[in-house]
Length: 285
Image (cartoon, rainbow, N blue to C red):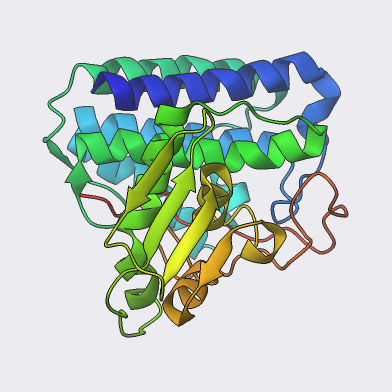
């Protein structure tokens, strides 16, 4: 699984270097993602990286780890509060270094694993390959809030971006079923431009239902880090438009994409109280 684990670790490394170079004050700065600060984002990633590691190496420990979080949630704690307790209140540079050690351990463990091995998760079981791909997707998605906060344009690796785009393609039906809606057929024809100018296509060619544009913007929409209205994606046909307005490549209950104009380097600061985020996972098999 060299491609998947490399994607996960390099995406994590890039976020680590971005935060490290920003200085200690960045941890308390509030992002556009539901009012979370940078500490909250790193805590979230670290907690679920730990969960992924346990799912691969110790199923019983995974069950206990996640049940402890659920018990706190049932007791009225938010996801932020619960993960903060589970990580013993780690913050700032200490949290950052623990997260780095943790994602390096996850990368090494999954690199040595059978990619077809089934592992438990907070939703359906998945393959080890899907699990580490999901960790890359979530790291990439949450990192976007930090890049936006600091006004930094990310230089995306084409192979890693393609993996995230594939998750988006693969969860077309899930996005509708998760909302108790019938899945329209056929799936739209998707034509995306990668960072190097390469063109990626999925599904049968069609003029009636088609999505065209930059791969990075497609990935931002399916991970719900951008509203489709804030992208230059070209949507042709009812199915393409409906999908891009509810696309969700992660598991958990239906989540609403950010309203137009609320995510991005030119969007205003978050207005409103912090809220919980999605359950971490993908539904790729």
